[in-house]
Image 1 (cartoon, helix red, strand yellow):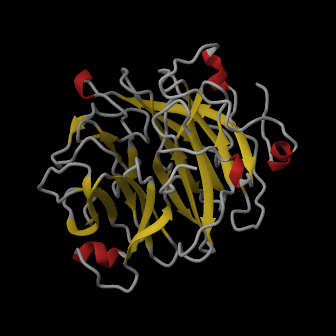
Image 2 (spheres, rainbow, N blue to C red):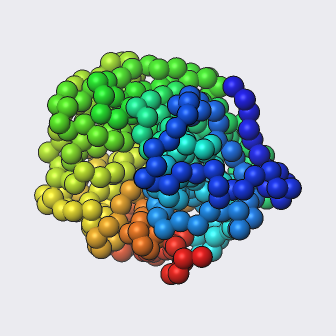
Length: 382
């Protein structure tokens, strides 16, 4: 496999025209689909004029380092064959944001999509993304780079490597026994949900198990998330024309058939994570007893591993607020990132709050901030 890790100096010297290697959304790619098995170009500190203009962006992710730096990733030209990713940071709790620090630019005919950003237990920052030939190629692929110095002014990044098939999107889960699990999905296929495991802190990953959505009519972008329950079992929530679930009692090797959850929800991404208190946090659309559209992003807390939920903090009541991702900082602050109107606004926004705010369903701490701007599209096309 050829390695194509490029830095800004390559661009400045005229290595290629950054705006030219993409197809339009309506074009059908030609050539060898295995080009998607080649790494995207990872461009450090791109100049602003090298970042292609777009009329659509979103699908964000967020992480927080031990020193409090916030890292975000989001896609530009999402849901098209021009899809690529940008990464930036904030050193002042999201009050301002850096210029783009990384651009993940796929090869011609390849889409770089559905990114995820994660701090591992060793303090390394991972940036994951998916690759497909064209918009969807039925195989996809999980790619990753890492840095050991996520708080540095100029972090050094590893070479990109491919970890397995599918689209990942959501953060890995570190189990109590030290294993890491990451989920991916080869959309709309038998045994579409794949669980990859690392037993050596990310040096290697291997397919550990799969989960199957038996009703083919409900299959789609599964976007699964795993939490380890207090009894040691693994609970996976799945996007499946609403919400669905599956359980593993053998560390992810086998899974029960994916079945519908009795929680009303549109066909859209959600966010599920265990907090440092031991409670679960769920960010979903609408109240627990009401099915709504892609609107009303709300945060709930569970003390019994998802059997019951309490609270319901409204993060953004508007329509077209989608794809939440989140992280809890060392001081207990919870950061939820999401997008609003990918077209035409292309807003990437963040909410901050504490567990007690979500429990109460209202502000009871002084950490509540809503609609914090991370990025948006210009009002006029460049």
